[in-house]
Image (cartoon, rainbow, N blue to C red; front, side, top):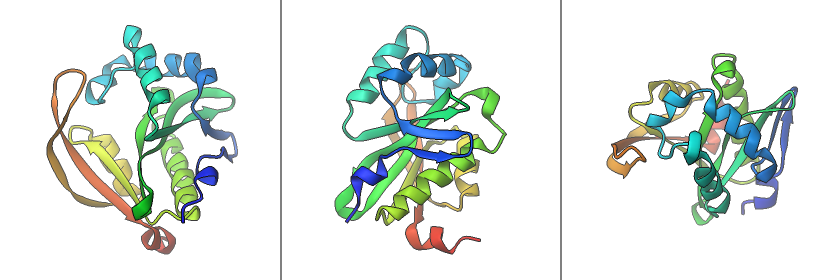
Length: 182
């Protein structure tokens, strides 16, 4: 059985805090997302300019998506979280990740993903999935670095906000694999 309340509770590690994304994070996330307007063409939705508020509202209203605001030293630098819950299979996806450019390459993403993975497996999740746009080599490399296994490509899996028909690469980590890592 998955402890859903514990899964979604805040997490802290040093200067990093993850807390469920809410209205109080709107302006901080807007600023973080605006820091890299070019990256949004490989995301399913655009979170810059006039598109930000409708996209933010859609995230908050989606019951299958529970993102965390990523806060470093009190500043919102992005979001990541759990989505596509399959509690009957003890599976969840980690995704919807965006991290502001100033924090990329600092190891922050790995630390955040470790918090999310530790929490998921600690709460009874058996399988964590990652679904990445085939064009996003940086995210694919980051997921592999975590120890995930590439399972395959879902061809023409979705249409993004730009009209691009996206191929999605599926990765997973199982609880026993995470527990056995060095």
